[in-house]
Image (cartoon, rainbow, N blue to C red; front, side, top):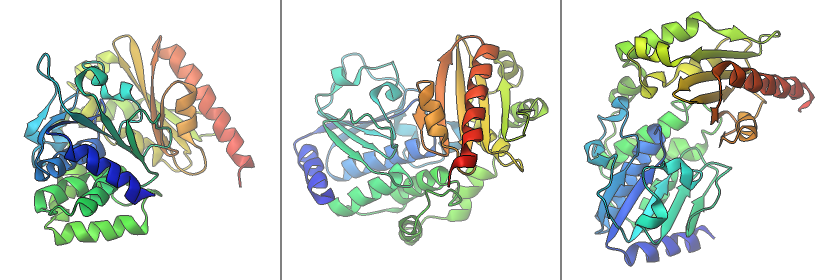
Length: 326
């Protein structure tokens, strides 16, 4: 079945000369690394490739080879023969700066989110650790050379979506892939130091503000923090400075669900994390968002306090229901 799907992708790529690789807004490591690796794959196959991220590249990932090639805007009237979207569960996740269907006639959707809307002309959607693993499989199918630069992008994408191999989406195939990437020249210490042991001053300032006003449900199983627009401004913090913050809240002993609320103009961005049985992807979906069972997000319009009350109440329902799960 998968070989048949890969063959469809091969035919689509073979018939194209230009390609756009696009990923989701507020990109994470899997989004950036997989987008670049996809572009490298297409480049080796002879295509003229443009990489697009509406929100650019977070500073933490700018060390990656080809990161400086990623565009956050496209020229007026730009057209491509096909697009590959990576790590985007629906077209809205690519952002509102461009209307993808007006830019390309054909979309290959590569994603690992269980709630993917299957919007592509070809949908390669698989429940797996990361899109990075999917891109690696395509590299093997196309028999392209896995050089060090490509390996560094795939490795970065994979470790950021598995929490450096800590999350339950880590599998035997994940470790086998890691071994192949090390053989290709990846220096694990260099990459993990840049991602996990390098923080901006703004990130530490906003983390201090967030932790100083943590709040908890009555039973202590739901924990959340709220970042107002003014707090972000005072700390000179950007969205990328919040990476890892909600995971830190989840690490608290006894906490089952962690939530981070961030006020941004007239909307509230919400990040969810779960520790054991609660499926925060379902909670996010209840509010029009989505994601994975242990990591998800949503964006809501409304007043910060009102949104917080609604979301926390729903999370508490799910935590209460988990006692009946086996």
